Length: 168
Length: 267
Image (cartoon, chains in turn purple, orange):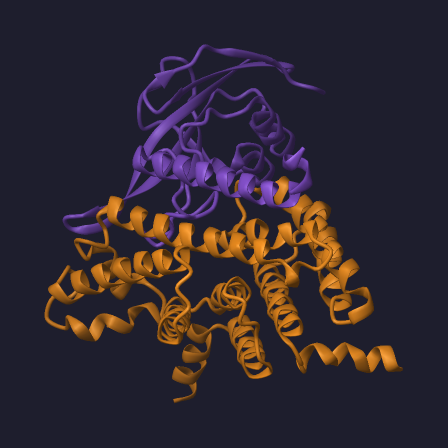
């Protein structure tokens, strides 16, 4: 009953505990290059320059594409990024919701065989520079105008393909 | 009319309670200013909470409705945070963790528990942020200071003069600066955790915050930190410090780098 009598103070202790647990997770994720150090609390901000992750959208002409023949796009991506937490968790696979938002905002991409390449920037010191590094990609293949399959490779892991019914 | 005039009584604190509330008001203002700088989004979910937070901050000025102002500030900020927690600035993150629990208490300014909560939160965050800097290695080897001294904003390039011959490369001065920054951050965090309240420590910490704010050209975060320290250490905020903080917030709207660019064009 004393727990409830001092519930406010106990809640404050709980909040401190939750906060410390999250900071510990953040330390681990930064150490394993899994999170944008400037976000999700930003406890590691100012440990490296602030360059956010980015996605390059390119189309391959067909299954047996020859490198160098890709077409690059600059689509509207704000909803796509938001659905994927702005890619601040580097190893989080792209979501179905995000891909649907991408096609809803860019109908010209529907039907195209696409590769969405996720790049993050690494701070290198010898010499000092920011290097873009691809950490994963998601390949989208359309079966028809209402169905696509996407397959993600992220942080060294290959995930199984997912089929999506694209709404009209 | 009397209620209107009473709004300004916040800026004339007569006791510790009022001084603490003035500090909290400055913290609220720093959040409002920082989100204004980020820009009102077309996303309604972000802009409506922001408008409510502005209204709450204004209502907080009126003594009789201060409680409602606090709720009108905290609840929309939590809603906004829940919607975009993965991308909010660290300023908002710290504000959410430190200011939201004030609504748990009818008179938070009288509660030692709330002040202790703030002190432990800020102290722990300082220590762990220092640990992050050590773990990254970029302060101990001087590489981060070297990078921003040549690629950062106008104010961040301030320390270039320390290593004129090394160009954009690392030099001993950058290494020492990096190590000094880590040491002070961890020491300050530990002193807060152990409730060390000596005037010299407070003076150094506030000076450090102001200098870092000038250096990084980000005064609203430092205003938040100063306001929270005033509450955590139960000193409260005087009218003079509040005026200084308000000036810093106004400076931040333009940014020092922008001001320096204008000055350069004129000259």
